[in-house]
Length: 382
Image: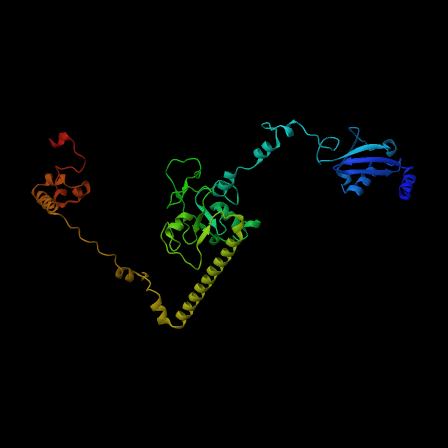
């Protein structure tokens, strides 16, 4: 009772405001000269609701910032939660588009319209160059991370100075392989690849819905179904034996959760290839040193070089191979013998079977004056 009396004496010089909202009712006592900001701070201390999201009304009307607590003495105010980004007064007033689901007005339709097409998301890596976003055109190259490139764009990237964050693993053309693509001649249907790419074994289209592999050693593009059916020891397309140490099956356009594992496979594969290149260089260097130390071993290792003609005597020795005699049939031999006999019998008759140059050089007809070497007319022959 004494506490209640002391509280009444202390609050007699203060404005008393009853507060209601999404909490139990509160009584706030403030100095009559304080404003709305002090009321919000007091409510924040009592309820834990931040002052910036409080919307206070009295009698159904929003209170202005110039309202004093003396004007609200013994009044009841209602606290509502403000939705950020709302109306002109800072609150949120629901409209018809938020209450009724009408076409092209409701929020769910707008989200659906602006959302990217999932089929495009799946087919885009198979139709566009990863570097330039241009349409893919053969020859197409693939890297060990499952990206596809146009050859021209890949060469410009390797030669150029600008490097992109996601393609730092490409340093030379040996870091990519040309893809051997099977193109279907059948009429395209919905869901097929725009360029007609299919699996050479199963005939399934390359549309992003199925997993495909590129065999790193030969560049063949095959589906996962073909690998499961024919095994992973040989290439399903060209039947080449695969190297188990290299793990040659490179997954194309892998999902995000498998990118890390594919990156580790790439590092392992590159380490094996690098070691093999170093071993080949060491072997070549050792063979050169051995050949330099032992000339006989050099001659035994290298095949004899073909002899080159350096003088006239050498040119005579290195004569071209003799031409093989042409084997004539019995009819051809008979025709040639008849021609020889006809040439001996008559000079005029033999001129029919000779060319102009042969006829002029013939010793038998050179002395004759009645036969002209110029083209003869029909009157002269008659």
